[in-house]
Length: 119
Image (cartoon, rainbow, N blue to C red; front, side, top):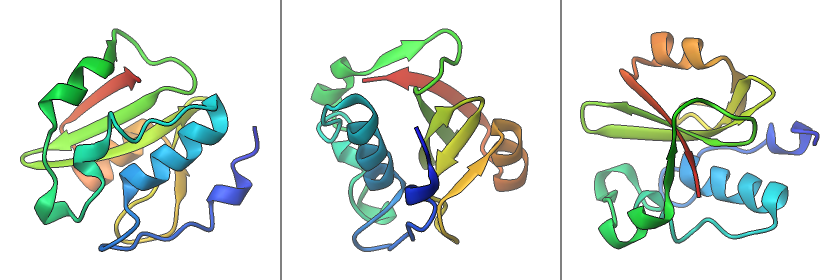
């Protein structure tokens, strides 16, 4: 799968964040909608919330696998991307979509926890 068509996506604080981006890529990759499992993240950061009933749809993985969702966390902030061939395709708040190493996202962006999930 080519990621080229996604690299031009731009974060919009009000209407298109990292969760929207992941949902778009996930649906293209897997042919299924992941919006319900990520619903709590599909709003502006100040309004994000965890929807407990939807957490049952999320499978925590013991180790990363290709094409899984990567959940980054720090204090009260979360960010998601998709692991593709060892790197994460994600949409940072301050730029266009990027394809970067997990370690870069952790170290440079300051995320303290990384989890790998499947929906």
